[in-house]
Length: 424
Image 1 (tube, one colour):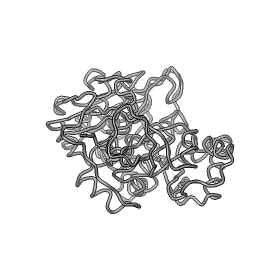
Image 2 (cartoon, helix red, strand yellow; image 1 turned 90 degrees about the vertical axis):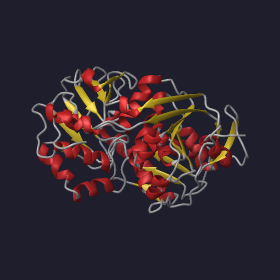
Image 3 (cartoon, rainbow, N blue to C red; image 1 turned 45 degrees about the vertical axis):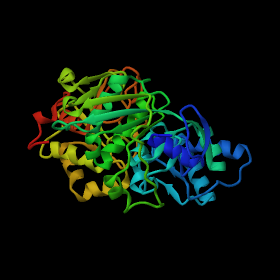
Image 4 (cartoon, rainbow, N blue to C red; image 1 turned 30 degrees about the vertical axis):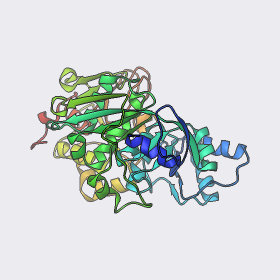
């Protein structure tokens, strides 16, 4: 029976020769992840049932990422619970502040996620990992607790949707524009409990960083997962990092899909998601000129080295607009160090940006940039629902790092070509 890449991965982990959409299966898990918000809840449930050991301390990672360095007593206690559990169970891959960063960028960076895996994360953006050709999905803390004990979980095999991008990206366009456009076309529930498979010559030319961005926002369309079939680009990224063996899967040419979308990437252009939903997407030209109070360059969607390089290229030698603040938060400690060595931190600092060590920070309205009433922010993050980054009456626009950097310079939503020196 022909199968999609997602169905093949699930079948292999369920020890079955084939699976069909809608089928209930139990799968072995390659990696589990919890963070400083979700892990303490899972730990409580783990201990409540009397569990004394995790199924494999090398396959459970805890990453302190959302409220670190601790912003208050409650967040400090959350982190303390996670630290004590990691120490007690000798977790090999425990990442504390100053040594880790945002989990969805950190785990691929550290080689803990490899092609062919099933990765279960107690965070909705765990779909990011599909950019490496694996099945990554988010679950609640109780499901994480059960998986910590057994090393398994159950799934209903999702239907797959194919999103095929052909042609070439236009100047300054990136994977962020492709995924915003996709969500704008199908809506917040357009892929509910389905695997979103991204294909086509445009996707094949994307570096791994952008493939991860593409899959990161699958959840914003309701997707169970996002995935890009692995290739030589994937292996070039994985080989020097991988902590475990990998396996490559691809969809069969005659595999069945719930639906197939085909778009010319050259006609998509730069996209902006407007308040108050990630599917309220418009071409940049329709919202250009909107005044902003804050620009945020960071989050698990767009805080990798490639993102920072793009932003720095636009901001080099320029200043953040008066009465506007720009916050730049590299995704991981390693990214921060690389940005420091390349002089990017200096570029941002001289431009007048506030720069932080790796943390999720303002993306979830945590801290380091929470918005007040009626304030307007242009963010490279993934959600802009009311209250997501602070006050429910604040307005958040979502866009790429290139648009964010240009907007910081002018104080208005701006096309990067208007302020950049040199071509895209």
